[in-house]
Amino acid sequence: MSDASTGGGAESDHDHAHHHEGPGYTTPQAAIEEGGREKLAYVMSLYVGTDVDAPDFVAVVDLDPESDTYCEIVDRVEMPNRGDELHHFGWNACSSSCHMEGLERQHLIVPGQRSSRLHVIDAADRRNPELIKVIEPEEVFEYDLSAPHTVHCVPDGQILISMLGDADGDLPGGFLELNEDFEIEGRWEPPGEIEMNYDYWYQPRQNVMVSTEWAAPKTYYPGFDLEDVEEGKYGQKIHFWDWENGTVEQTIDLGEDGQIPLEVRFLHTPESTHGFVGTALSSNMFHFWRDEEAGEYRAEKAIDFEAREHPDWDMPVPGLTTDILISMDDRYLFGSNWLHGEVWMYDISDPSNPRRADSLSVGGTFGDVREVQGREIVAGPQMLQLSLDGERLYWTTSLFSSWDDQFYPEEAERGSVMLKADVDPRTGTLELDEDFLVDWGDCPAGPARAHEIRWPDGDCTSDVWQ
Image 1 (cartoon, rainbow, N blue to C red):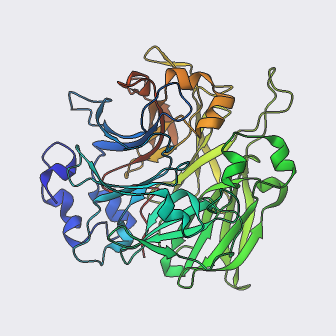
Image 2 (cartoon, one colour):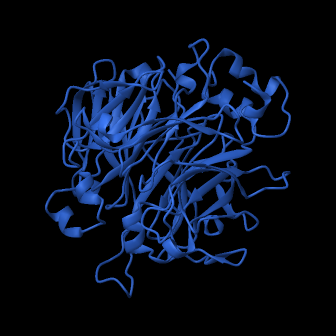
C-alpha cells in the first residue's frame, strides 16, 4: 500500500507490517496492538429528506489531533445520483481474508438503501478516495432483491450484502453476492429461506452466521407507524445459518421482549459462539450462545432499558436501542439508545451476566448535554464506532431520513454531528470530549445527515476472524 493509505502522517513499516501478509490483522489482539490510532474516518452522509437538492456523499473526516484540519471534513466523494439514502457500507476485505495473497482492504462498497444502487469506491489514497464503479438498481432487481443494508467481505474475496426487500420493496429479502471484481454473482441463499432481513455477522470457525429482522422496505421507508408493529409487519426473530451452505439451521423468536432486532455481533474471538443483538423497539439486549449439549443456539434477555414517561408523548418512550458494538478485546459492549439520547457501556467479561459500567446522556428526547462547543445537539446518539484500542468512542446522530424527520425534525435543518467520548477501559468509564465536534451543518451544499462510520484500516464493526 502507498504511504497515502495511512491517512496522513508518516508511520513506520512496523506499524503496518500486518498489511504485508494480507488485508487485516492476524488476531483481534494484533488489531489492538498494531492498528495505531485512527487518523481518518469515512462517514456516510446524505441529503435524502432535507431541503437540499444534492447527491449523498461519503465524507472523509480528519481525526488526527495533531492535524491542522482536525474535526473537519477534508474530502467528499459525491454519488452520481440523488436520493440514494446512503446507509451502511463495508470493505472488500477484512481480517478474515488474512490468508489471501494480493488482496488489499482498498475498496468500499457503498449501497443506496432507497435506490438499491451499489457504488464501489477505491480508497487506496486514503485521504482522497474516488468512485470507480456503479451497479445500477435494474441489475440488482433481476435477482428479485432490493434495499441493500449490511456489507461484509467473505474470507475468499467475495462480498455479501443483506437485502431487505424483493424487487418491489416487499418481502421476502435475502442476500446478494458480489465477486472480487465487484460483479453480481447472484443470490447467496436459496430464495425463501427467510422473510425479513436486516443485519448479519458470521463466525467462520463455528460455520455459523446470524441475521436479524427489520421490515419490508415499503413498511419502514415512509416512517415508523406503531400500527405496523401491531399488525406483525416488523420482525422479532434471529436466524442462525449454516455458513457453508447458506441455509437457515435454526430460528429463535425473541417474542414481545425482542421487537425489531437490529444490530447483531458475535464476540471477536473466532473460538466464541457468544454474541449480542439489540432489539430496538423493546430496547433490550439479548445474549445468544451455542448450547453444545443441546446442539443448538439459545438466546435470553440480558439487559433491559426501561421506557420512560415524557410529557409530550402519550405512551412511555422506548430507549430505541439502534446500534451496538463490542470492543476488540471482547470486554465491553457499547450501545446507543437513540430516543433516550444515551450512549452506554457494559462489561461483558462474563457474557451471560453483563454488568453496567457507565453511560452518557447526549441530546435525544431526554438528554442532559444539549450543547457541544455552542452547537445544539438536536438528535440522539445513533451509529457508533470505537477505536481499535477501545479508548475512544465516536457516534453520529442520523437513523433513517424519514424516521429522523418524525422524531428529530430539526436535524434536517441543522444537520448531523459526530461526537466522541474518551473511554477508560480500566475503570469502565465514559467522558464526553467537549473539544471534539464534526458538524454536518456546515457542508457546502447545505446541512447533511451523518450515518455509519468506518476506519481505513479496519474497525470493531467490520473485522471478522477465522
